[in-house]
Length: 198
Image 1 (tube, helix red, strand yellow):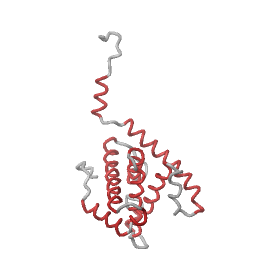
Image 2 (image 1 turned 30 degrees about the horizontal axis):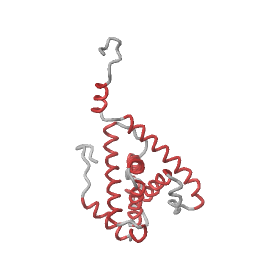
Image 3 (image 1 turned 90 degrees about the horizontal axis):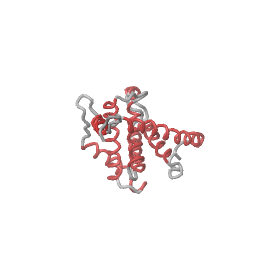
Image 4 (image 1 turned 180 degrees about the vertical axis):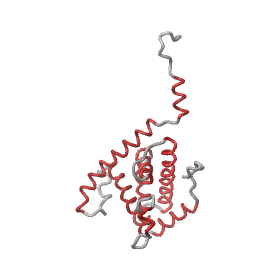
């Protein structure tokens, strides 16, 4: 998202790069989803991520911490709550973060420590955490990669984290409607004056 021009620009090569990652990692053989589906899921998550930046700017929403993390959460919550199979789409997007992390060298460049984004592997687990927290029974094996010493506490945290983040975003989504819609609603309200004509 470009705040100067108020536009979202995602090049077609982003989809092609995603498709290559899912194809090269044998996504269909390992997870039963075609590389095309994984790439399209990732594209949708990315579009919602960028739309989150635009929404934060438009509504002047205060963000404590990294805005990139906030809009990752925004995209994941919208997928889970508003789309059929949205949680599965979010898992695809998380897998893309994991693929990108695997593609990096064993060490991070100094610049990545001061980047506005969290590390890819952090984004992977954060997204899976929200999906798990949305339905612990359905996704009970989703976090099995976490070391067992930490797994119980992490699963408890994910349930709390999902509810907390969902509640916070729902507050803004419900109360920060477009100004045009708010004005229209107010103009349609009947007068409460006792002298109003009936």
